[in-house]
Image (cartoon, rainbow, N blue to C red; front, top):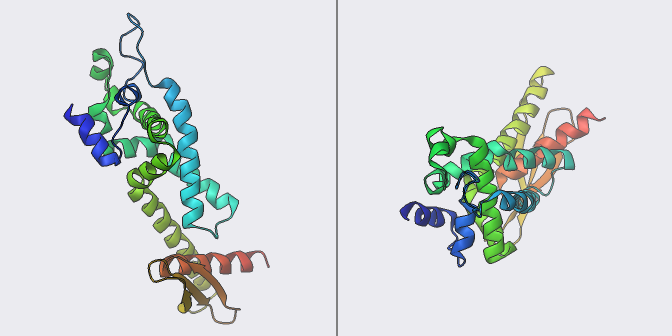
Length: 227
């Protein structure tokens, strides 16, 4: 089936166990109770846990300075049903989903709940087919744009919040400068300082200048707001 082949291509994982892939893509409506079908409900349960783990790993790797509350908030957004449904659409999963004719006519192929559940089932299938590293790779591939958008939004929020904090006090805008960098050329770590007139400088690090600036802004705000 062309839709299934395209799904595998976009996911970045070619299944060795084709029956496992078929099960992940089979909704419980198939068969309409007249025959027993291996559908994806149990895989959804496992996939929810697999997705939760690989998403948590990705967040902590990208943002080592985030506190538990920040990680929890971003993690919930990454693994939400709405996000899973969005990723499913990006991968072309709706066209590959096996549904009963009646369910399809009722719009199930575009239903966020059904697509989100199927995406979780697909992650479980990847895990069972190729192990945890395969699941990590599929997450990095499928959630790449979503993860980048989440990190960029956090960066904008921290720097914007600091800018608004300074303006509310009649202070000049925050000034960011690179202090130093370390590590190999292919994986540098940047150290950035943020200066607001009349206040101690806050320094932080990140895997890019943007990440380091965001971390410095967040550190500055946390320090001053709890002082």
